[in-house]
Image (cartoon, one colour):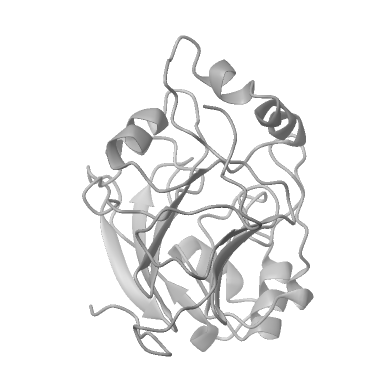
Length: 267
C-alpha cells in the first residue's frame, strides 16, 4: 500500500504535536490532521490517570484507534460520541468493531485483524485520511489486541497499547520512529526494544498519578529497572499536556519540547 497522501505537498511545513488524554490516550496531530488512540475510556485510577476529553468534544479527525476492549482503553458510548463529533472512522480489532456496531453504522467502522501468534508480530496496513495505519497483533489478555504504527507526511509514531511482550515487536518495521508510546511492563522486554530501535522520543503511557509523580522525581525508571545503568531517556506528560515539535523541524531531525525546553525525565 502506498504512503498516505500529503494533503498540502511534501515541502510544506506543518506543526506536529501529541496531546496526552489520560492513561494510554493520545491525540496525534500534523497540521489539521488528527488521530486519536485509546482516548475515550472508563476511568480506572488504580491502573492509570482518568480521561480528560469527552467524546462530544473531539475535534475533526481522520481516525479513532482502539487497541482492545478493556475498560481503561474502551468506552463504547464515548467512542461513538467522538466519532460523531470528529467525523472519524473507528478502527480496532474485530472484537472492538463488533462491540461498536451497536453504536455506529458499518461504514464508520474498520476492523484490522492480523493473525494471532506470529513472532515477530503479524501486521496489516490501511490508510485513513492523512494517516497510514499498520496494526500489529500483539499480546494482552486472551487476544484481540492491536498495537499501531501511524505514518503521516514522513513522521512515524508507534503506540504499543497494553502489549505484554515487546520482545516480539518487529524491530525492522519500527526503525526510525519519531515517537514511541510504550509502558515499561516488568518482564516485557520493553527496555531491550527501546535500546534496539532508538526512537527520537520515548513517552511513558499507562502510568497512575503516583507513578507520574515518581517519574517527575526521577524515581520511576530506576525503580522499574533496578540495577540497570544508562537507562534510555523517557518522557511522561500529565493528562491534558502537549508535546510539540518546532515547525522548523522535519521528520528525522532532533526535537525539543514546546517553548524550547529539552525533553526531560529519568535518565
